[in-house]
Length: 286
Image (cartoon, rainbow, N blue to C red; front, side, top):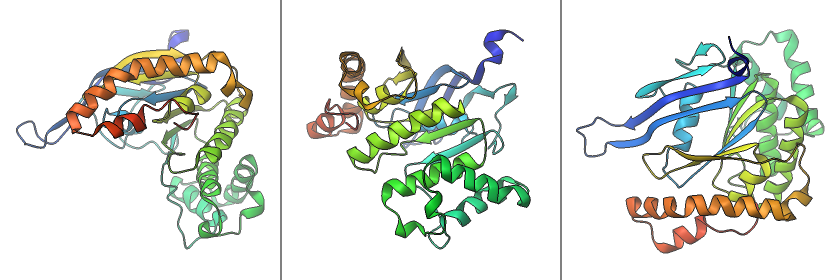
């Protein structure tokens, strides 16, 4: 096995995916002939117009969707379904059980994974400490702010101790200030844990601030138009957001996405305002 192969966490080869049968009126080709390698220990952002297949690719990587064509490997293992010992998911909705405390939510997650009972409490404590929520272990989700609930969801994923985290717009429902702070926390986590993270976002600034690389998607059927590298070490500081290099790379993403968003608008019939909202250059949570 080559050095390049051993350093690859996820390998996507010629993946296409369609929803519905080819002869159905609602047939949608979401992904087209997409290939990608995710390096161990990197944070890769997927960004593109709405409906371009970013979340579809993430679900294919995690085994939640079987591709119509193509293959995905996690290390040396082919992906044929969910891999709970290798991959943890974090979604935009935190999916915490409202009737259980934060600690109980984490214990339940580990029980689904099959973690021995003797290990669960210690893992939960370490994960809550990693996200600064150890003092809130006995609280219910309704007693926490939106940002704290997302941190709890992150802690639950960390407690599973997988090497790979797949994150589908996990900060999308939060206000800009909270997103910035959680982005800093995630950068610190990456520098400490060396986990491999694939992160779907619509935010240009969030992608530049978080990612080691950003994969830019075309309009549907989505395929990777270009991959740009963000050469800034983790953990990243807020000062990076005001640097000339940050703004240059955000503008580069905007230029790559501009025509693709226009194409996506034409496909979906969205009004001009939708384009203006999505292509905004203002701030890391644009």
